[in-house]
Structure formats: structure tokens, C-alpha cells
Amino acid sequence: MIIQSILGWRPLAVLAVLGVSVVGTWADAPAPTLEQRVAGLEAYLGNGDPTAALKDEKGNIPEGLTTASIGVAGPGHNAWLMTSAALVLFMTLPGLALFYGGLVRSKNVLSIMAQCLGITGLVTILWWAVGYSLVFGKSFGSPILGGSEFFFLKGVTSAPNTDYAYWVSQNVFSMYQMMFAIITPALIIGAIAERIKFSSIVLFVGAWMFIVYFPLAHMVWGVNGLMNGVWNATAAIKAVDFAGGTVVHMSSGWSALILCLILGKRLGFGKEPMPPHSMVLCMIGTGMLWVGWYGFNAGSAVAADGVAANAFMTTTLATGVAAFVWATAEYFDKGKSSVLGFCSGAVAGLVVITPATGFVDATGSIVIGVAAGLVPWFFCTRVKKWFRYDDALDTFGVHAIGGTMGAFLTGVFATAEVNANLNLNLKEIVGKTLVAEQCKAIALTLVLSIVGTAVIAFAIKMLMGLRASSEAEREGLDINDHEEKGYIY
Amino acid sequence: MALKKIEAIIKPFKLEEVKEALTEVGIEGMTVTEVKGFGRQKGHTEIYRGSEYTVDFLPKIKLEIILAEASVDKAVAAIVKAAKTGKIGDGKIFVLPVSEVIRIRTEDKGVKAI
Image 1 (spheres, chains in turn purple, brown):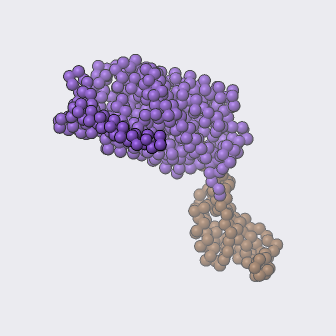
Image 2 (cartoon, chains in turn yellow, cyan):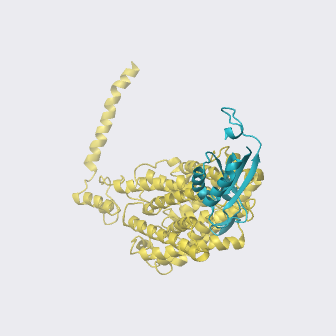
Image 3 (tube, rainbow over the protein chains, first blue to last red):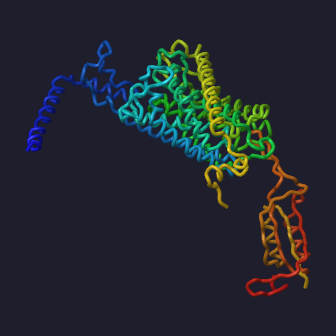
């Protein structure tokens, strides 16, 4: 009887409450004018703020005033970011796995692939749990580390987070940024290939994400980040990094050098031949990296807008030029241009243009392409020989040197003519002292990467060792760490 | 009649020409193996991003032919004619005695089994 009576009156009460609240909203909320609704749609075309036309003289939006353009993703921008996210994942799986996998000896090809796969899974878990929030949150109110509001992707929905994009769903944005967090530590494995223990590299990457990547990515890209010169008016270092010259390439490249020095050389390095086991796989991987990099660079506009279009062009120009220049340098040096030379030049071009891609024009990108073909080539073929460090697949030569040079050259060639966002907070310094700010960002990235990596690497070395046993290294990591072989004849 | 074995080491790209030349002089069977080795030709150099490696063992083809003694001279002449480029690394031919040949299917022995 009691239950019946409860059921009896409850729906009525709910209806009554609903009715009051619905009527109340309709009665109080001001309706947007046709002009305001059109302005919202026009903002979509220009990747602008759809709420701009609703604001009064003081910048406030009257309570309840909204249009259908607000709080939703724009289809075109969102589609490009979903495509870009898939492209950036494609850079790691299988692009980088094949590029690096082809360059090692056949007994270690699966170890590269397992490391790429392992890092993808591990970073996905970390990113969901805390990573996205620590980079793109702001609840800590810190220029060094983000916040806790998005832990476990709580509240990360299909609505845009307007701190970063007016027209891209925050869940898409978080997945897009996750792909960067995946490929960055995956780049490190090139320098330490063919000798590190699988369990050690997994542990290293887990720690490295917290100590190096999450803070660095927040500093450079977080809305209140220390080095976010474009968007943060109060940034202590007014530097710019469009798609990750410091965050991705410098951090991974310099960390790779330190880790490879602590780890030591491969057995037989400099005495035994260690040629790539498949230049064909390496070439296929290079092509995938190049294609995927359009998502990396043009996607970093976080919109399908004019800045993305410019990034698409400069990425192409710099990469084509760098590939040709590297192979030409080889020709004048030794008399032959090699496929590995073309591949290395292409990757170097992609690396060096990365921080600059949305800020420089065609001419700037060509100069960057020439530099990318020559300087990393010199480091891989000469400097490595002088100092005899075993950077197995040239992560340092290409990513650290290329990323550092790219961060510097971005300061030289950035122009507001291709990216009006440079006028927001940097109008006074672009073309003048921006290079000095870039140098500060370079220095901070260097220190964080080197110190962070050294601390983690020595800790793991003491805890469980870094290297595979010498028997395992001789026999191959594939069979010893994974009980598999890449090729069964 | 005495049985002989010819072992010839040749350049891989000469295999087809050698096979045709042998077929023309009536040699009806042979065994071919991909092998590696070096003699006076030594190896070659490969360069990967500035790291130079000397590859000592070059790919070669080894032909094995069992035949009657009377056919040896023309078979050797055919191989030499087809495999010769005049450059170092053309290979070598060895002629060895064979004590017996048995065809497994019929258990024929000697020249009949060739």
C-alpha cells in the first residue's frame, strides 16, 4: 500500500517540478538575435569564439543567453582533429616501429616493435588516469604542472574545452594530445636499441612521463604554462613551439643521449658490423612517418584553419628539401646517395620544421629544410665518430640536434603574417627578441631532460639493472625478452 | 665408365646462362645452392649514416653436377664460356672423382643412374 501510494504521487510531483523549471527557463532566458546566431556560425568558419557576439560591453554574457553554436564541436575542425589523431598514432604504429625496426639487426626487430606497443599501452593508461589533467588542467594554478580536474578524463566530453579549441571536442583533443605523449618516449628507444631490457624501458618510460613529459608539455602548451608565449600573457618565458620541437624532439633526443651513455655501448660496437637488417622496412616506416606528420604538424593548429593550411605547406617543403640535401651531402662526401640518407634527411626535415611549422612562411621553411639536411647529417656521420657514443639509431643526432635547431630557427623565422596569434601576446618581440626567449626555452628543456633522465636511469640501474644479459644481447632480444622471432625461415 | 663430380662456384647473375650452356651440351641435371664466400675478390663496403662495414662474404652460386668422365671436358668448357666476365670474382670449377651413384627410385647404379 505504501509503495503504491509513493508510485502514485511521485510522477505527478516530478512533472510539476519539471514544468515549473521549464517554464521558468523560457520565461527568463533572453533569446539570441539572428545576428548573434549568424555570428556564432561565422566564428566556426574562422575558428573564432562563438560567444563573442553575445558579450556586452563589459565582456559578460547575459545569464541564459546562448546559441546552438556554443558548447558543441564544429564538424570540420573536429573531423580534421580525429583524422590527425589517427595520423599521429600511425606515426608510432607502425611508422616508427618499422623505421627503427628496419635499422636494427634481425635478431632485435621485435624488441623495437614490442617497445613501441608497450609504450603505447602504458602511456594510454597514464594519460587517462592523470596525464591529460597534469598537462592540460589548470586547477593547481601552476605554470609547471596542470591540475587534477580531469583525472580519469572526468568531465572530458564531446563539448570543446575553450582554453584550447573553440570547435574541437575535448575528448578528441585529449586523444590527439595523447598520441604525442606516446610517440615522444617511443623516439627515445632508437638510441638504446638492441641492448636495453624490456622491463627496464617500460619502467623508465613510466617514470619519465611524470618527471619530464607532463611538466614540460604543460609548461609549453598548458593555457597557463611557463613557456606558452602565444596564449599565456603572463608566461615567464615567452617562447613558441607549434608542434613540439622542445616538448617532443628535444626532450626525447637529449634524454636518449643521456640514457645511451648510462646504458653503455652495444657489445661489439665499433668492431662488428651492425648494418640495418632491412632498409625496405626502414623506407616504408619513413613514408608512414612523413604522412603521419601532417597530423602532427597541421593538426597542431587544433582546427582546420589557415594556420593548419600553412603548416601543411611548410611541413612538405622543409621535408622534401631536407631529404634531398642530406642525400646530396652524402654524394659529395662519399660519392653515393643512399636510401638511408634520403630517409634520415626526411625525418630530420620533419623534426626541425615541427616547432616552426605554423609560424613560418615558405621561404623560412626552405631555409629550415637546408639546415635540417646538413646539421643532423654532420652529427650522425662525424660527431658520433669523434665521441664514440653508441646512439644506435641516431635519435640524438636527428631529434636532439634537429629539435634544438628547430626551436632556435623558429625564433628567427616566425612571422605574424602567417599566424595572427603571434600578435596576441608577442607583438613586441616577434622578429626581435623572440630568439632570446627561444634560447631560454631550449636551456630549460635541456636541463629538465638531462637531469630527469639521469636520475631515473641511475635509480632503475640500481633497482633492477638496465641492460639485458650479455648472452641475451648476443643471441638477440627478440627470443630472450619476448620468446618470439621476427622471421622464421 | 668412371664417374666425376663438377663443383662450380659462379657469380649469381650468371646462373641462367650457365644452365642453358650446360643443357645445350647434354647435361640434364644439376643441384644449385646459394653460398657465400670470398677469394681474391675480397668483399665490398657498405655505408650506413657514415658507419662503414666491410662485407667479406659475397653471395655466390654453387653448382653440383655428376656426370660420366667423357662429358667432363665439354661441361667444363660450357661453364667457363658462360660464366666468364673477365673480371676478378668469376669463380672456380673443381672436378672430383665419385665412387658410386644410386638412383633411389629404381636402385640403378653407375652411369645408368645419372
